[in-house]
Image (tube, rainbow, N blue to C red; front, side):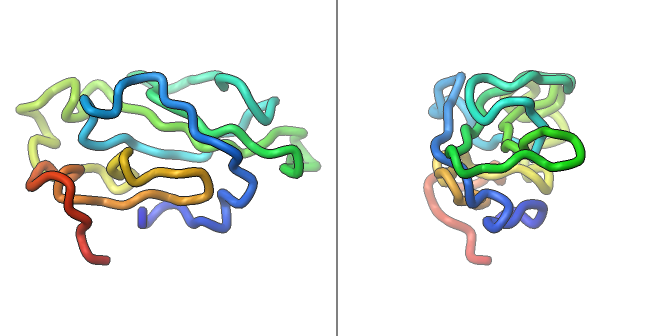
Length: 126
C-alpha cells in the first residue's frame, strides 16, 4: 500500500474512472482532494494532468465545516516518468505513486516493480 493513504479513507468509493489508457502508465500519483460533488470529473488545480478519479457512493457525507467531499484523484506531474522517461523518476517513483493496475474502489493500490521502473507485473512485498 501507499504510505500516504489508508483504505479507511476510501470506504465510500463506488468506482474509479480513468481518463487515459493504463497500458501507457507505469505509475500514477494519488491524493485526496476536496470536491463539491460525489461524482463526475472533479476540478483539477495542480501542475501536470489528471489521469483518473474516484466517485463516491450515496452514503458519503460532506465535511460538515466545508460542505465538501474528499475524493481520490490520480495525476502525473510534468517531471514524472511518462512525461520525462530519462528524468528524475527513470527508476523509482514518488511516495504517493502506485501502479494503476492495482487500484480499485476502496483499495489504495500498490507499488510494483513496474511502478518502480524495474520488472513488470510483479507486486513488491510490503
